[in-house]
Image 1 (cartoon, rainbow, N blue to C red):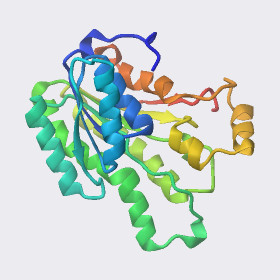
Image 2 (image 1 turned 30 degrees about the vertical axis):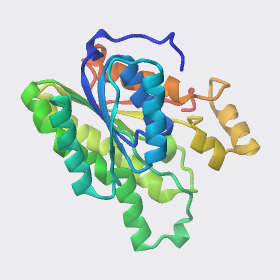
Image 3 (image 1 turned 45 degrees about the vertical axis):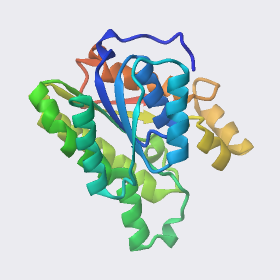
Length: 257
């Protein structure tokens, strides 16, 4: 993990909740927030990877060790219970990073109603219900930053995961609607959209020489975008430094658009 990135004094002892924090972008979010001095709770269903994330934080000697709750985000009751536990254990939550998603490939011709619903639920529904659970005490604190991780995939007109891309396009609807609703209480809501971020999952499951060639052709920056680079925008928005930003979407895609 690069140590040359900015430090944000406002994030020291701030409380944060991250969905899908066990691996990939979510794990990087958890680790970087912890490095900033945040008190972090995160949820995921992958227990092994979650413990690996915690071990990395412990190994770096961060002030606060992240708290993990095993949750399948298809279970909204379990998610909302975890949100309440985080509020109780951290004495409030003022940063929410809605990150968890699944970009498995599928063909539109094979889409069943059941799979459509699963794609919406795993990539969109829990974003709203995490906000519903955590925003009331942000309102009470008159302080909050909600960062929704979207995807540039729906802008690229890619055709190999329509359920994922459609769900991710709706994340911007959540951001803009809730930014207006919560802004009067000094709670900000923004979207950060990754391009092709080179997580372990992406490289193991979806990488190909042809895909790499196409990405480098389309990006202005001729390099892979790392999770650590992507997370820097999340940190800025979580911190007071991003205090003037709400209802916006920020691209971290190497200049692909």
